[in-house]
Amino acid sequence: GAGVSQTPSNKVTEKGKYVELRCDPISGHTALYWYRQSLGQGPEFLIYFQGTGAADDSGLPNDRFFAVRPEGSVSTLKIQRTERGDSAVYLCASSLTPTSGGINIQYFGAGTRLSVL
Amino acid sequence: AQSVSQHNHHVILSEAASLELGCNYSYGGTVNLFWYVQYPGQHLQLLLKYFSGDPLVKGIKGFEAEFIKSKFSFNLRKPSVQWSDTAEYFCAVSGMDSSYKLIFGSGTRLLVRP
Image: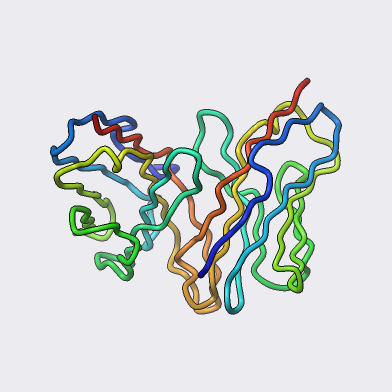
């Protein structure tokens, strides 16, 4: 597609439930990122994939959060036993492979707004 | 710790007024700097970026930003704003050694009155 696509755009769930959020990156982009944006804050880094592997998952807040990218394209962010504090907009971004000189432009999707009741 | 500070959370201007949004960062090492914009109901879009070279960078829609290394600043400017510039603006930094990880400020909401 022309841009980064995220589904669903909105997700309402109950505390304790499991959710999956999907990201479809720009075609040809090998790098994929997840960020979380809480109300009144800027996006916070969660995880970075280069191809199929998670190159840096240091931003995942705890072991309830997990992300996969099995074929190096679409990625799924999975949250187990959701808590009210998980309510936020989850953003996905993609880019070409970051260069050794640090040049990296990330393109963002519209996000999934997760509400945990 | 690595961080980005945006001093103004809300800015209200009349059309044709000049704009300057402050951004200061804390990061040890060489940095890349970005301004992203989010128009109402839309996704984050890149406004401009600095990787190296001329510290005065020009972006889309008449925006520019100046990297002042000694002040750890990357302020965004526009000489004459339009109603269509109403949006939220985010400053972000990444390190040359971890260019994949953007660190964002908390954003500035700009309202331009016609």
